[in-house]
Each structure stands twice: as structure tokens, then as C-alpha cells.
Amino acid sequence: MKVVLAEDLHLLREGLVHLLRAHEFDVVAAVESGPELLRALVTHRPDVAVVDVRLPPTFTDEGLQAALAARKQVPGLPVLVLSQHVQQLYARELLADGTGGIGYLLKDRVFNTDQFIDAVRRVAGGGTAMDPDVIAKLMVSNARNEPIARLTPREREVLELMAEGRSNAAIGQRLFLSESAVGKHTASIFGKLDLAPSDDDNRRVLAVLAYLNGR
Image (cartoon, rainbow, N blue to C red; front, side, top):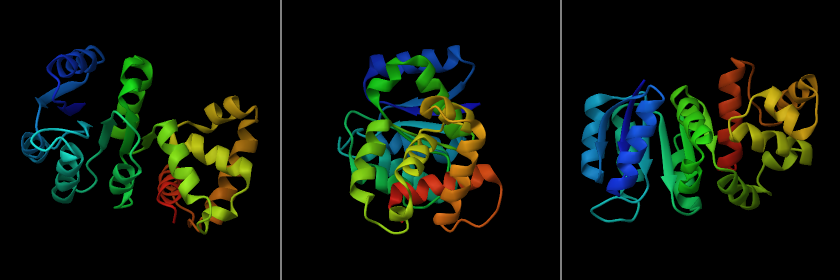
């Protein structure tokens, strides 16, 4: 699985390269600036990009903007964004085109190897991997938006865990529900969000995107 990595801190960048390669990822480029990232993404068209939000030369949202620009040239390019702090604007920009293969993790999660590697794989597979803290912030701001307001408190809990990328079985374990009960909740969620029948994995991603975008 090909990965393009963007991180301006040398030690962290090298550490991430080593970690990814230890888990059998092929790091085809490891860059430290926004312009380098855009070139690498368009040239290599990786299976997933792991991108620090703040990169040279501006140290604002250079990494995110480079990734979004690359997505326009490589539609559906999976992007996992790493950020030091929760920024709702960054999350909304990442979610704006309404396609899957996206993730937003706080950098602290990188030190949990299993969680980080799982997020990379999930995003590369076209799913979502949203940090619980990011979800919590978006949840508060979207609470009154329709059709999100139609969801019951339990359905919101299920959808929050879906946004983290958890399976029905994992959601059931977390909420002490049977897998069939989780399935009923997800079916209700799809109906309330007006998501027509299709591949369940695709509807899960669409439901998450609708929820996080406040649609």
C-alpha cells in the first residue's frame, strides 16, 4: 500500500516513516512542505496521504490545502490529516466534497500505534477515521441541524462510533448492544438521513459525512 507522508518536524517524520514501513506500508515520498506535498500526491497517486495540517511555507493550513488541491486532480484521494489541536474549519474543509477516504486525528493519537495504523488502513480503504474530540466538537455545532435533529440520542451514539470507523460488532461491544440491535439503529439512521439503499459500507460513509457536515 503506497503512502505519501507530509510532516515538517524531521524526527517525527522519520519516526512515522519507520512506523509505517514496519507495518508493511510503502512510503513512496516523505516531504516537509505544502508545495512538495502537492507534487508528490499528483505524481505518485498513493493509496493514502498522511498529512500534517501545518506545513511550510505558511505554517497555517498549508498541508490541508495541498491535500485538497490534490484531491481535485486525483478525485477520491484518501487523506488522513494530523493536527495538534481540534479545528472545526479544517474538518469541514476536509469533509466538504462529500466523499469518503478521509480522516482527522489529533497528533497525540499517533503515539498509539494500533490506533494510528488502523486509521491509516481504514482511510486507505475508503472509510472514515475521525478523532473522538473532533466528532464531539462537530456534534455540538450540528445538534440542531436537520435531518440530524431527527436522530435519537442512541442513534447519535451509534453514528459517533461509526465516524470513528468502528464496525457494528465493535459498536455493540462499546454500547453493550447486540450486533443485530446495532444493525437496526444503523438502518434507522440511514432512513432518517434519507440515504437510499445501496452498498452498506458506502451508506455508512455517507451517513458519517452527512452527520459531520451537519446536513
